[in-house]
Image 1 (cartoon, rainbow, N blue to C red):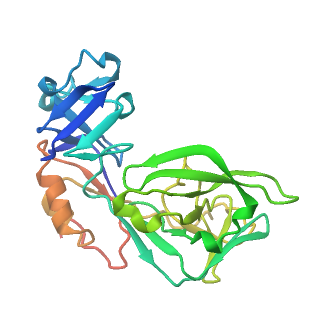
Image 2: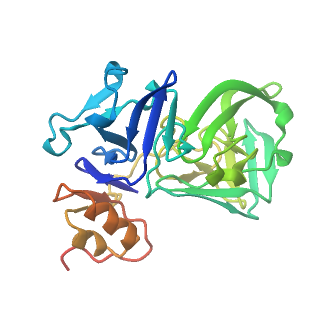
Image 3: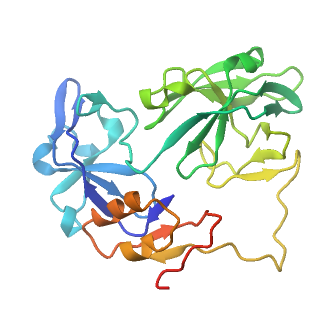
Length: 299
């Protein structure tokens, strides 16, 4: 996934509105999508004239240190009751146009165990591929032993999938595993195939795909960390050997020409992301994941 080394922004053609207690706080057809340095999410910035700043004085963020955005403000998403893009209500936050979530039907054999107890097994999962995150497998509820789980009040939101509800594992004779499973009971239309399917945190549950090693990744807040790994059941992470090769360093690219020269990422999306940002030069970090050997910038 892309992370920018400097703040970048691009205009949005969507009409964006937000309300609080029935009063319109934001109504703008000139919003900007802003990406902060080192963060993969986007926020909206609005011309001051399009925001009732008097209604939400404690929820505003200004860009006084940035001459290009000095006349814009952002409004904390959670401070308003409702947000709309055109006439579609948006939950949680704005969507990045370069972020994808693909839910793909699969026949891979997925087996899930918690503390040695098999809690789910399926040959008809949905494989979910989301930009910048490891693949996640969602299983039909019929293939999950739901009697071993108890619904909780925990709820989290995703701009691309909707609100997730959680279940705690309460297996007999084993420790409770809080909120180890989640599902989207009423997902956003873009993620409709996920409705009712169940996924598990592989930092707690042992998730085995096609008889391979146990999938796992370091936990970094809900949804896990970046970068999948595979470990054997019960295996602890081994310290790196003294002569182990250093991890591949990302290229630091400072122009559209350099970025397209890698031959790894979609050129249309990248060229749009860079060319619409009006603060050249833009420095972009690209983590290479292609099997091909990329052409180094400038060669």
